[in-house]
Length: 146
Length: 146
Image 1 (cartoon, chains in turn purple, green):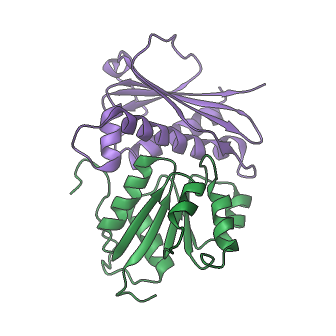
Image 2 (spheres, each protein chain N blue to C red):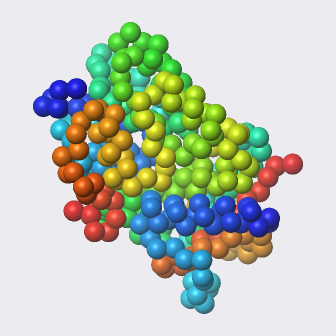
């Protein structure tokens, strides 16, 4: 991954998790955060000057706190609302990262976010950006269609 | 507008969580809000408006079925709704598209936004003086929500 792409992904993620999710994300990852289990996988397809997918994997136990923080709820969050919240987070990260990566001249259309809740055993993402979250971490990657 | 009259508002966003965030920000802003209608896409927004008007529409751009820009174009083409005030709430960062939208809308709030930013845009668009004066605004989300 190009350094500029990594910087844009990290900046968009830090800002979105903080301003929309009311968490305090960090660039540093602790050992406990690194070994946390996969919790959810989010992906946002996009088209425009470049076509591809931005993916976010959440590790640990951040999904429900993020969703609850977003709407200021202290009660139980149903899965569909948690998925909606995570999808919106991924959407906002994507919408903010793409112009930083590809320039502000192009018009990108974002597809509906796909959210998979639950930890599946996935191979580690090799070319990704990591952001520390309070109870785990997020991995972000970008793939372009050829 | 007459500051004593209640303000009817439409929120069009495909994320239920984002609609909740916006509605909560409005309710906590001190604005004399009347009806707050919600729609998950432009087509549903038009259905919500059937036979009635709202003072302000807060519209996302990326929505399935009918996107926000087409919805705004339909509003502007309608004799009944063309005077509706419209604030776009989106991740859109394309300079060209933002400029194009500015010509047919009344405000733009970039996601992610803080509650104060959204409140200020709403008050400015409605031409209502901000009574809180120093920019204080209740936080719509977050664990310390009230």
